[in-house]
Length: 286
Image (cartoon, rainbow, N blue to C red; front, side, top):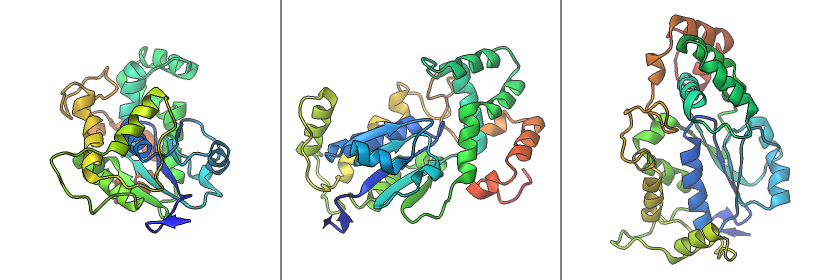
């Protein structure tokens, strides 16, 4: 069955990576999809093949916060958005997060890694970070990704932070679940969205489902604003650093403040084509 040109059996995916605004992106994607009455699931690192999981759990949308392109095989009838970040900024962000702020409960590997990071210099710590399990897995996932899949909208962190609202308008337009005809009114209230959000939060009843009900841009804007950097940090602006906060700084090209020639050499030796493939450098001379 199709509605609005999209199959009602369509699966919607957020494909993310560690230290690529994955918490924020999942929050926005999850709340929006739940407001449409869809069953949402979330998996992290590592994760199984997606097709059997979706079928077994009957998910209608899924947040994959440490995506592996190889695990998408046999996926049919899906649309997804995939957001990446400059790999060098991923390393720096991961270093500070793993040293100070990331939750370590039930993560023995990170507990040991944090002890190491706190016992060496920052320069050596960044080298250790490049070898740490989840960080290396992230860089390898970016290296092995196929960036030309017509079912996947490819995005970058640097675009998202400039205009997060427009980014998500583009995402849900790609999904074909954006109500483009919605008139702008002073009262941006949608009873179905509100009902489903409350019901999901308190696990009271099953969400009400209208097949592929569309999201109004005004309501989407409210959700995006709710999870903005400023709101999540209590008013701190992007660029104002707090090294012990999960939302440390939130700006691009921060790697230039930390990478030494040693880090550059190590990165080029281990990931010689990664920046070219992801579009963050036009040649190897950086």
